[in-house]
Length: 445
Ligand code: ASP
Image (tube, rainbow, N blue to C red; front, side):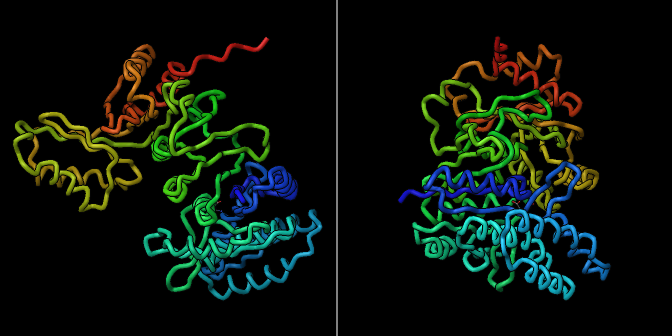
């Protein structure tokens, strides 16, 4: 039987009404047999996510501060959902045990994993499905990567195709047997692992937006959703800041060739975005680009030295300085006598002066320049290789908006063009590029 794995994010399970929407979505397609859930998210913008409250509880317990308040909020959220859905659950007892574990000094990762654990138990009970604890099946290696044995273990656990399963997202277990969590937003990864393990035909990722948008909606008013995007494109978009789907979640499904659909729990009638191994002819021809994403917090260090091109090992030594300080870099554009290294500020960690001193001492450049407050904008699209004039369109749009382009980088894969502009020009630049590629919708009469 063909099966779909459906993962529901925090806002999709935030309260009893959202649980009912999930049930309706599951019932609407009998192939949806495996569900993966996050912990309940915010119901209102000013409310805390359960995961954040759990971090807080753990840290307060570790400082021997009373945890009544945050723990009370967590209890209220879960018992409220259970009461409203009329679930006769073992929840109160489990919560009490958990409180004792917190006060006895349980690990931080165990503590935060309970958000997904309780949520999945409630959802399983509500749907009359089987609860699956990933701690028994997903094994994580020291570097946070999934041990491939996990797929086999999970496959046997999810083997009965006549059943419905609900698995908790966000965590697994390490070799020492301790609960280990993925990075934030990691339930997407759990869903992808389940999809691969179960040999699903589709991995649905249900969230609160109707798919991936061509540009950031905080910058562009009402941007269009992307209908279809390839794994390669989505990886570039995610890496450059567009977040809807955790970038590490792509790997398990991509390797198995399972398409992903990003859907909106609050508007299930919307088609959402399909992420596919290979773009269909329509996606390749209908839009020249897939999307625009960007990061507004980069620094560029430029080293100039005459005859640098003849000095063997110059680039190696320059990048070696970044390595020594454990700073990863994003791009490294170069010309005959100059080389720049672009790093994100959070990776540079305020070490700019140290890095500059080392470069000065070790490479003795003619000029050394640092440019802070740089924004990087990626225009992404596989169709670029075949389309003439994409770069011209980008730069014409930027010139018309009087935006100075500080740096340009196009990878050999020709899947994106990256332009660097001053941070102050970032938003206007994104809008200008968006307008250049997405024709204005004609107003409906
Ligand atoms: N609950 C976790 C978080 O808030 C994981 C997830 O929602 O995917 O990051």
